[in-house]
Image 1 (cartoon, chains in turn yellow, blue):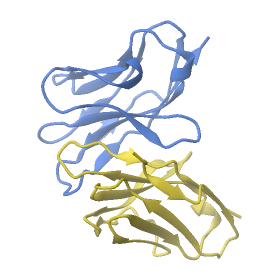
Image 2 (cartoon, each protein chain N blue to C red):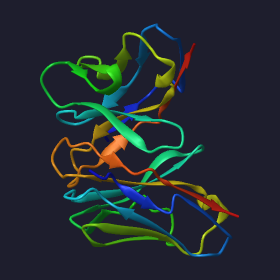
Image 3 (cartoon, helix red, strand yellow):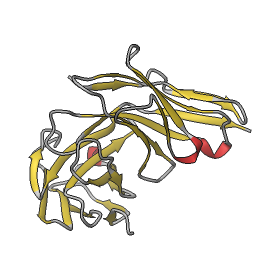
Length: 114
Length: 115
């Protein structure tokens, strides 16, 4: 089975530009999570969805960040406008909602904002 | 609040020796505990989990973890380390108040195995 798919794998952009990261969860999974990983702050949960509905976006750092899940097989994380401090690796993970189910992570998108 | 603590930023072990990566937890109710591994430039990979039952849980790549309720610990272990085990390891706990399968990650421990 295909795992979680993320695109692009690498993104280099200039400050002020819009950035869109994409995620395709594992088929049949009904929870989706967006994380950010940096050396300074470690792994941070940004937002998660259950059955395509955003449940908790308290980890989204600023209004510049937004996430959508228009259907069960696709989600986007958008940063507009981007800033150098947004440089990080962004991971998407999916899971089947049961009490103790593990999450499956994608390979990540490495974002560099110049 | 639910949390996990990984007290060691780095663990260094010689190849062939046993390894332990420590984790303690704080959670309301029954703890559902996880270990993940992250190799360089990769996403996190699930290793094992504890739900209930036997306190010794076996997982991928020869790893196991021991659940200790009295010490609120869930240490990751392997009898004989390999150089290829060098990676970043995360302990995590299920958030019992989440309507989705949200888990809370520790800060990570970097495991370095020297030949």
